[in-house]
Image (cartoon, rainbow, N blue to C red; front, top):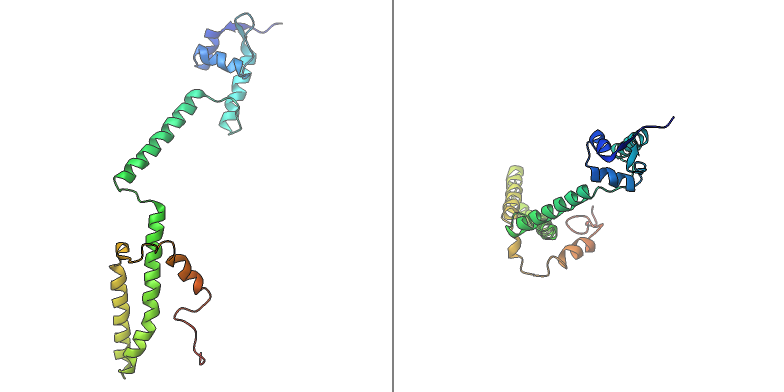
Length: 186
């Protein structure tokens, strides 16, 4: 018993595709090619179902839909253009600039914190009461934090700051305790 065959228009209506797309599926090997302009209905349905299952389960489908690829390309181009416009409007900042500014802030914070023990020691020498020393140290910390809150990366005097000081400062003192070398009594 032979299986029924139908024209491309019937297969296209059944699959809800255009006649051209049915012909593309046949040339891609998804469905069997037509014999004398007629398609084997059962084989076409099985082939198309297998094709849809592969796509649904994320399997590699060799057959690329040109319309989907074009839409994907257009979306990528639109996204790129949108990012470029935002950058031109200064709504976005390049990551290397953000990294350099944060590194500058960290270096400023580190240097400010390394000064605190010396300034605190000078303060503590002249005071006798615990609460006076604590209040003086707290004032020094607040002063350092206020200075850091007003940090402006544009006031950096060294234009090569991003390239030279950031890497060398951290690398030179790695493994050393903050505040310098410990004294012999520690």
